[in-house]
Length: 277
Ligand code: G1P
Image 1 (cartoon, protein in one colour):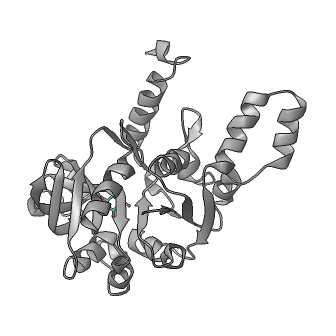
Image 2 (cartoon, protein in one colour):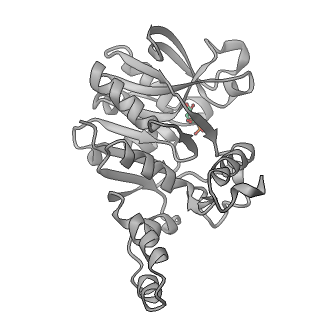
Image 3 (tube, protein in one colour):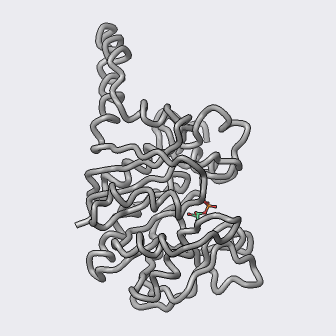
């Protein structure tokens, strides 16, 4: 059973500056919920009980969001704003939270390696919080189902265009069944000439404990950072790795375009806002 999930949220989000100079990117709202809450809710809906958030010392807003706020709660109570009070308390109760400080920015692979103690020798799900999914079955659940069947590291795959080859980790893979692939190789941001296919890893992973050894043996890669893509490449030498083509909507909310698309998508689903469109 996969019960622990890690959310890497320590980065500077340079794609969204100056908005993210003082406010963590993960706290920017899609309609009225911070982006990171979507990732936590997806994890919880997929059966996760414990959520570890890798964060940076300046990003105190993330910890405050998932912790209690007694003054605000007392205020809402006094004003008789029961529904709002419930929405605030619900956030604290979503899961058991742990916060892990990443002292310096050394890439996604490094951030994930910070979660080894939190994982405690158990499988670990990872959700990139700027990747937003919406589907009938939560994205992470679709991965966990394959992880439990294959007993092997599983990642989410999505079709990408030419531009996508410069933004994502691109895979070479063989189809093993409807929507499930065996990964043969993967390259971080190869560009259109070197891309081995039109499928990329898009922000969700379920790892066996083997990933931590692989990360320990992974040196700096693309951009001089420790890349999770390279660590998965190393893991492939000793373990099988599978990919699942997600069924549903995907948004890369790390960039302005995807952020707006996700905002519009969730606003359209809201009865009080849908008439705007
Ligand atoms: C990271 C990973 C990359 C992956 C992408 C989307 O890149 O390194 O392999 O495809 O997330 O989840 P980043 O967006 O941090 O540049």
